[in-house]
Image (cartoon, rainbow, N blue to C red; front, side):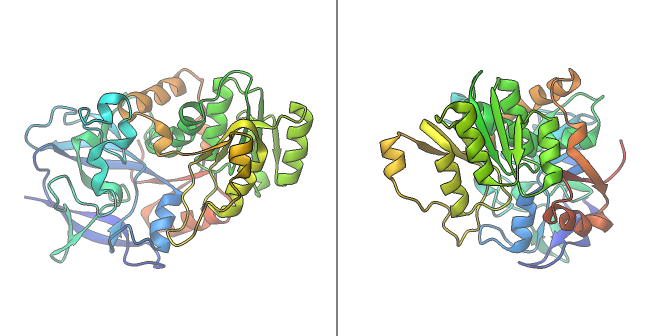
Length: 373
């Protein structure tokens, strides 16, 4: 016997989020049912609301969540009923070529992220007999969801769910973009372009890795204030002011790394980033562009002449089974700030307000709270 659950869904490109009551199947082999407690509101969710050919509509939103395992299907070994978990929007099988070589963010089990199917190529959400996918095979905007056990990462029971949810995407992606993909080392100069829910954690990661100069660029003064609080040594709304500061503090050598974590990636952001790094510098592209827009458009001369590099970053190059618990351990040790990241909390009924606040630059991270805990 399945159950019914409420969820925020979007019925097509450009539509608003609406609350629907859906049928939810029982978990099958290697699957668990999770009572969702909290879910971050990420710009990736806004991308599917705006419209993307990579997703099927209607769709349950949400991919950055935390909750409690309340039922398990056959053959589940990763977690048990009662465990507190965060979701991984890329499942981790642990044995494919990528997992076994330390690249869990590229696990082959992530193949259905766009169509929302479980690993047996079927769905668990339904509405009046019609299959409804969950974003990234999760659907954390639902009060209950069924996911593969490989997407459930056990966490300590004493962690607050709203903070824990943040490591399910934004914190780990931003941190990893600076520490793993960029490879920031002590004494480096780092530029972070866009300091929202992902970029602010690139700032935290670069600071933790020992960046000497850490420059944040964002059009929203409120976000720049947060960037200064969390480690930026210089913050500005003006890219030219950032360039002048870089020239001054590095004696013209410019940045070692530029990390692009804007809400929507555009070609001019790539051009800016390439112009801000010096010889052998690298540009890390974490931000997602619109599917019909080119985000790389520049002369190849600076890349060849100064040996610059452009690198893509998926989930910050992190390994969820290891890095999510590590992020939360750093939080408990007072070494990673999750409390300051949450600007405002929302309910299912006010989820559209949350995305309006995000687009208006009023939030570093908004969090949907299904139930306090």
